Amino acid sequence: MEMSSAIIAMLGFGVTGVTCLAVAEKFVPIMPSYILLMVLGMAASDGSGLAAMVVATTVGSTIGSVCWYGLGRALGSRLVEALVAGYGRLILLPFPLYQRLVGRYRRNQFWATFHRDNFRASADMAFL
Image: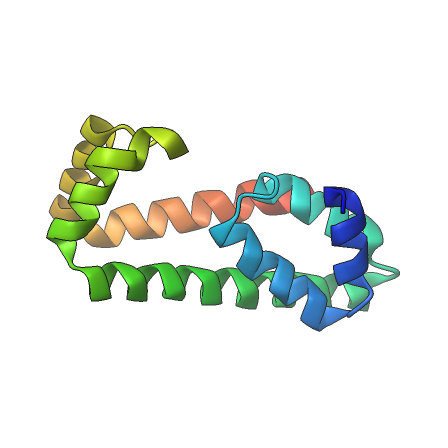
């Protein structure tokens, strides 16, 4: 099944399908999130449909992020570090970059989270 037909099939499930697409996008980078949001925005029939899709993608993205967080907590920082050191390059996350990001986040958790989430949300919404 081709990617676009899979997305169209998921859209057939309405808001639930959109939520599942947003969760899946966190685990399997089907396409960049801004492109997925553009496609979903074009599929919305009216303003209320667009609002429902925005809410559904927000919920799905949050669920996917919480799952990643839970996985990281369950594995522990040492094992996650070892996995990134061994396999991070496969997902374009070299170990030195991972170490810099972790260091920056630990030094300034609130602002790193606030800036990243607000920048990402505004960038995604700009494409809708």
